[in-house]
Length: 423
Image (cartoon, rainbow, N blue to C red; front, top):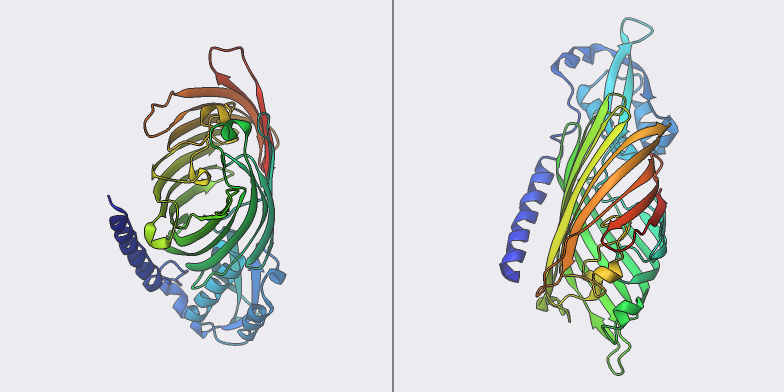
C-alpha cells in the first residue's frame, strides 16, 4: 500500500471517529432512570460527595453545587453536574443517589464517586537498572495540563538519549478531545558496537510534536478506545562538516484500546491493544522516507493471590528510517536477559516478541513471578534467529519490580539483574 493510500485511509478513519465522538459525547454520560422523575417535586436539602473529599473539586463547581441547595430536584441538571464532577476528578463513574431528607418534602443528593478513568496516553515516571545497559531514568512533574521532565534513557532505543522534555494538553468535551503539544531536546550517546558499524551517527535531536487525541468510544465500565494523530517535527544534529542538521519529519498515528473488568476483591482482568504508525514522507520535507508499523496486545488475569500476564508485540519498517525509529529489543521489557547491542547493534527493521508471566502473592502487595520471553529481530535481507529467555522476579503494586533473567543459549549460564520502579 502506497504512502498516499495510507494517508487517505487514516484520514477517513480520523474523520469518522471524530464525527462519532462529537455527536455521541453525551451517549455514555450518566442518565437518570425514568423513576427519578417523580422526585422532581422534592427540594434539595443538601449535596454531598461520597468516596472523595469535596476539596478536590474546583471552587466554581463547588459553588454551583451549593446553588442547587434549596431548589427543586432536576434529573437533567444533576445528570450534567455528575458529568462535570466525573470530568474534574477523572473518575470512572459518578452516580447521584437520592436519600431521604430531614422532612418528607426534602431529599439529600449524594454523588458516589467510583474508581479512576482509564488514561490510555499516560506516561509515568520511571527508574530502571539493567545489568548490561546501566541506569535509565525519566522523571516527570505535572502541573495542571502542563508537564516538565528530565530524561536519561539507555533502555528504549538503540542509543542512550538524555535531556529535557515539556508539553501541554487540555481535555475538551468531557475529555473526548485532547489537543496537545510535546517538546524534547536530547543529546545522544551510542554504544561502541553501533559506532563500529556507522561512522557518523547524529549527536542529538530536537522534537516538536503537536497532536490531537479523541475518544470515539467509552464503554459503561472501564473500556475505552482512543485515536491520536500528530506531526513529529524532528531534527538531528549531524557531525558532518557543512551539513549539521537532518530532518526526520513524520506523521505519527496511534490507535489504542483497553478494557478492565471485575474488581480486585473478587478478581480483575484487563486487556489492551495498540497500533502505531509513523510515516516519514517527502511531502513533509523529511530527509528520511520510511513507514514504520508496530502493534502490541496483552492480557492480565488476576484471581485471588495469582496473576497471569500475556503480551505480544512486533513491527516492520520499510524505507530508510533513522536509528531513532528502528526496533531495539533486548531491554527491560522485551527478551529480558539478552543484550540489544548483540542482537542488532544498528537496530532492526523487523521484530517480534512475546512474554508469558505467572505469579502469586507472597507478602501483602508483592508477587513472586516467573516468566518466559521469546522473540526475534532482523533486517530486511536477513533472517532472524529466535531467542528465548526465562527468569524469576518480584513485582509490587506500587510499581517496583526486580528480575533475574537468564538468556537461553549454549554458552555458560549468565544471570542479568533488571530492577526499577514506575511511579
